[in-house]
Every structure is written in C-alpha cells, then in structure tokens.
Image (cartoon, rainbow, N blue to C red; front, side):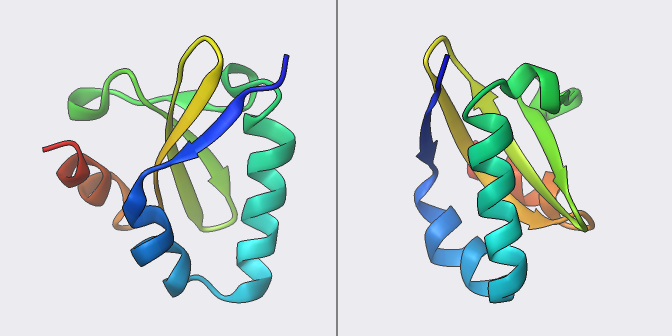
Length: 92
C-alpha cells in the first residue's frame, strides 16, 4: 500500500533550506522509498512528548513523522541534535 506524504509547512520553509542539496536528495529518496511504502517497518517509535510519532534516520538527520491509515504526516526534518526539541515546539 502506498501512503500519501504530507508535510508540516515549516519543513519546506525552514528545514529543507538548511540542508545541502546532496543530502536533500538522499532524504527525499529515503522518504519516498521507505515512508511512502511501509513507515512502521522503517521507522522507530518516539516516547515522551512525541509519543505517537516515529523517526526515520537518514545520515545525521531525523525525519519525525506520524502515520495514519493512508498518509504519513512529516513534522520535521532536522539534524539529530535539535530535532526532538524543534518537533515538540511545532506541536504546541
């Protein structure tokens, strides 16, 4: 089953601008090949304030997402050092 990919508005405005083009391509391929096909298989569940969300590791970046029955909602694509704080702020 193919999932529809949906992005938080700040992913394009803030997250992707800060990522070099080569890494952006790798992240896009990982999202399309992994999250769009089977997010639970390739992701790892998060805990705490991000319970219900999952992460996908792509090099030193993390993709924080939530999977529903037919869609994957991507909340953040940020360097591993800042991703969880930034993702939690986007939920408030």
